[in-house]
Length: 166
Image (cartoon, rainbow, N blue to C red):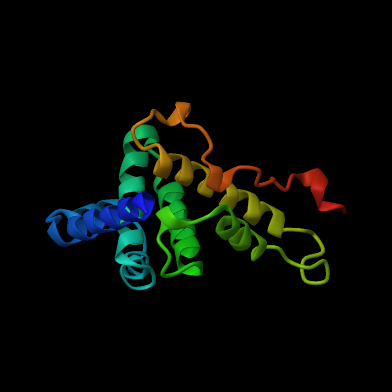
């Protein structure tokens, strides 16, 4: 019962932050600068406000830690948005390993549709983005290069070139 209370408290804190953060719009503008207007609109309308705030905070942390290029930043935002949208309205903090596996499995394509196995590159890119995101989500105060894999992304296999079975 204590864990449930902690989750409820966390939800209340996030909701309060959404309602009280006078800088939320500015933060959203910062992370979506250089992106098409649909990116900001989708963050606000296609996923929950809680997940939007989580993505905003992650991207701000990423900008501080690694200073990604504009293209990488926007691509990461979109990938996280698609992931959150796939499981909408579930909170990113409540995602399980099975949620991650289900999402990644949705990227797989049958041999008849994708004989060159181009889905593998998409799968790998999403897997890496989710790996980095969940490391930050579960250990935001630890330096980026010292974060360990949380259980939510443990034992999620990569799909290397040799695994394509051409």
